[in-house]
Image (cartoon, rainbow, N blue to C red; front, side, top):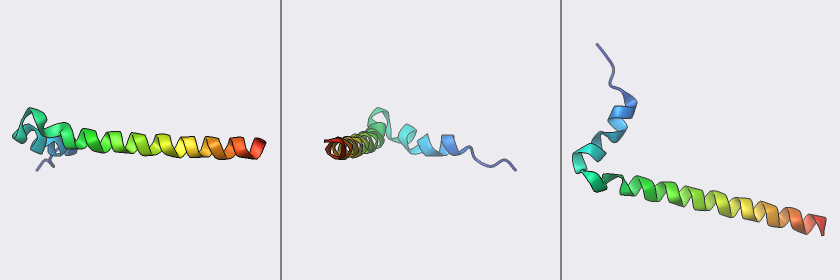
Length: 52
């Protein structure tokens, strides 16, 4: 018995819903990128304050 491919299962719902199905996942990805950028900016700001 073969186990289902996890990548196939992850995108199965997207395929069933159609072309706009990935929008939620893209929004989550953008939110993570924004959070990472804000964290990086905070760290750089803190480091610059230490140097001053």
